[in-house]
Structure formats: C-alpha cells, structure tokens
Length: 341
Image: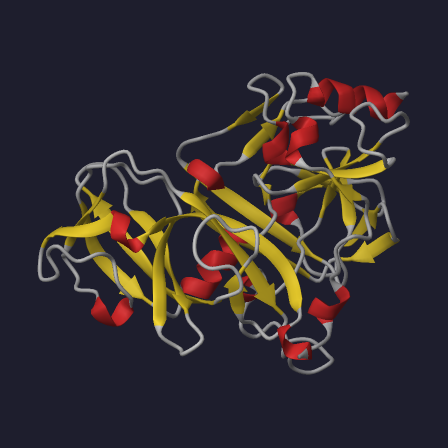
C-alpha cells in the first residue's frame, strides 16, 4: 500500500483520442492511438470547435499515475500511463509537441487515449505526424510541470547580492524566507513554446511590491504575508499561483514565441526572493523528478536515488489560495495592500 500513496496532484488540458482523427494516411479514419499503432506522415485533424477538458493526474511515490477524482476526463481512480511524445507539423506555423496518455482498466486493457497538447491546436488544421517517441515523454512532462523563473530574474543571495537566475550555480548560497541561508543543489534550464498553458506570466514592477518586472511560469506560486486579510483567505501566509493573478493590466500573459525557463533546486522546498518578493523554489515529486539529469543521484555523495523527494513536502509555507478568492479585478491591489498594512 505504501508504494501507491499519492505524492501530488496535477491537471492538464487534454482531448479524447476520438476528437483527433486521421484525415489522410495509412490509418485514415482512425482516432489517435498508442505509439505502436501510429504511422509517420499520417495527417490528423482536430474536430471542429472541440475544446480541451481537464485531465486530473494523481502522481504516486512509486512513479505511477492514476486519474484524479476531480477530473473532467476519464474514470477517476483508473491507472494512467504516459505513452509517448508526438511532434506534429501544421500546414502553417511552427511544429507542435503533444503528449499521449492512456487510461487502463482493471484488466490491463486500454480504456481511453488522451492527447495533451503542449501548445494550442487549431480546429480543422491539418497536422502531419513527423515524430513519435517514448523515451523523452517523461522529461517533457516534467519540464512543463516545473515551477520556473525566466531568464534575467534576479535571485537574492546570502550576501544580499542580486544575481540573474541563469548565472546561478550549484553551491551558491541563497537567502530563504523559511530556513535562512541555504545552498543551491541544482539549476536547470529548458526552452518551451510560450503559448497556451505554458505561456509565462508577467508581474509588472510594483504590482506585488516587486522591485522589477517578474516573469515566471504560470503555475509558479508566490508567497504573500497578509498583515490584514483583504481577500478572506483566513490565514496570514498565503500562496497564490501566478496564472490566478492575471488581470490584463499589472499581471499579464506573455503569449507567443519561446521562453527560457530556469529551475532552482534545494535539498528542501523553500521560499526564496526573486526581484525582491517571495516565490517558491522547484518542488520535486513523481511528475517533476525526471527534469533532473540522469546522473544527478550518482554525481553527489550519498549514492543513487538519495532522499531528496521525501524531503520535498508541500503545506509548510502557507495556505494555497483557491482561484475563486482571486477571481476579482482588484485582487492584485488587495494583496499588495494586505502585505503593507
């Protein structure tokens, strides 16, 4: 039983395979299938006006996935497998990467196939399948799920120095809010298309008392200490996701192009200072762990596998604020005011 304890929950926007069928090619008329059934150069098309739905993912300590109970797609509690990574070439525009996830029933049979696009798909646009591979799928999912800072973000060191995230190195000493001075264990970097659910969020200078513009991944959580509870959270220390703060003015989505994302990892999950305000460091769980290089566990004293994921625990840095509490045009202003009063 211990091996299947849930470590974390996540969600992605996905389509049912039946919504993405082959219009021309060897599998003409068939819906998207698993890796073994796919044929390169088949041309797929998304059904007209179909919208993606939320696929809830429960990640377990043994590395397995299941469908979370708050899902809109699939059968809650069913086993879920990450099958492969696809590269699709549209008639116009850049290539699009997508993940294929498979629901499995109690007898080990395929019960459903889901397409998880890493950039928005256009209805009635022909997409040619140009690559399908299994090995990089876990790492790609990890990169898209990691909380990250963008190039140029200033991180506060133990000395008070402000250093750009891309110049940070393992061994650097950083000021944390929760545990004083801590040593960086690893800094990672990935480049992703800055579109759809992966588009970074710009928090303009001063919006939350930040010293300069701060640009982070959409799920990155910022910590606000409320001297007065302006939004009715019921707790002084709260964590808010960047995407939940978007108001089209002081907090906006930077949609388009590519983003250089950087991850900063410690032995524990910490709150650090980025552009002068509190923000979380990289959190390792069964979803994000593959973002680490393959030799990470053996390159340091302590031997393979280590104990790092067990030391990464949520819930120690404040209350996660639900989107509903922030669904108001003045939310950012209220949080700024709450931190000052």
